[in-house]
Length: 256
Image 1 (cartoon, one colour):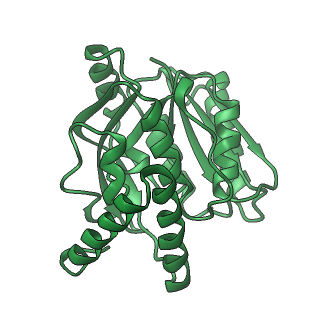
Image 2: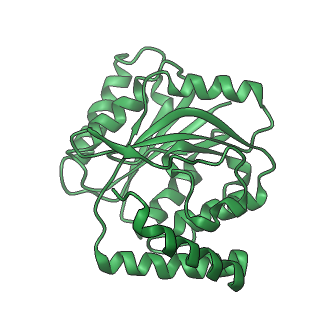
């Protein structure tokens, strides 16, 4: 199992270093690390180049220069950059840890590989996730009821698995649909689960996800996008029913 870890960046000089270190400090070194930058104008590129040099100088034992690659060029947004990362990937699993997000601890990748050795037919491997703020403080969990048996129907009530705590086999990983500005990850996971045969749950934290605020305008657009995606994937009746249930539960759901 070789994992392609992908980080998408754009003007993230205050967030990127911790993300890079969470990858490079893994005890398991069987990965490649790809950074896709959207032509940053701050010090993001300087940070990437500094770690590229440190790897070349042997400062990270067991990691070779060939395992660290990056590009910087204009893109059409987050999901376009994520597509570029997959195009560059050579591993057999892909894992997105974007700027500001962290791999949970230095043993995480090794724990994932151990779990995979017990279920080598896995198409996806997924685990738990913590929410953090910009100071790295834990402020909550992604979902207290992550399904142990993940299927497409699990997504009728939202994105039940954190994107940063999900590894997907490259042979079934589709490109992100760029017509969705906010919910392309939801559409992507639905299509992954349409093609996957074995989804393996590991009851451990895989990542720490940097939570950011979303404007009311974008929240409305996200609901519209998700409704369209669900209608296409599940049909109108199931979509309306699931939204009715979500609306009933919403006042009692903790929000971060």
